[in-house]
Amino acid sequence: MSILAIDPGPEQSGWCYLERGRVLASGVAPNELMLNQVRGEWYSNVDTVAIEMIASYGMAVGREVFETCVWIGRFQQAWGNPDAVRLIYRRDVKLHLCGNAKAKDANIRQALLDLLGPQGTKKAPGPTYGVKSHAWAALGVAVTVAGITPENCRRVA
Image (cartoon, rainbow, N blue to C red; front, side, top):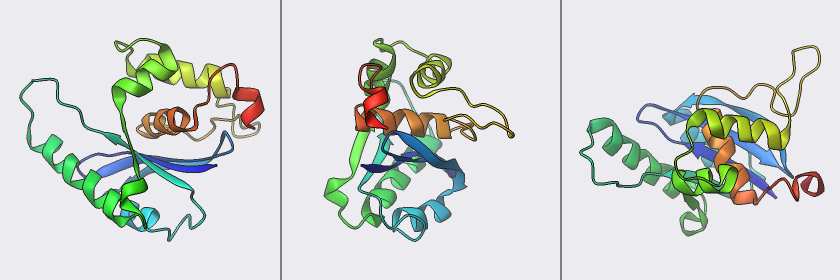
């Protein structure tokens, strides 16, 4: 299964392309460029698009949150089958990777490193080499959608 996962933002978004449990590419891109990626202009053989969804916790939010919501909708609509796009809440990623809804970004990053392997170096790249910034959140979404756990991590690859 190949997954294009997106951590949306108001101006740019983190993304990760995961295939059979392996990170093939990741990065942070301006949202207009992400629209082209979702349309398949970069990855035409993607099986699933998964986007981190905004959740309301009763707190006041600002302009950036609403702009991010608009981009989520645009990304979803850009996919050939908008109803098939998986909208994944951050809480579900935290529970899947850490078993705790109070996990922080650092906990998620460490869980991903423990699960998939270290970043490595330029000379000896590891399984998560090149993943940085908001692409870590996108990788968390992809791993959650793929259902990769410590028990099945080696069998996925």
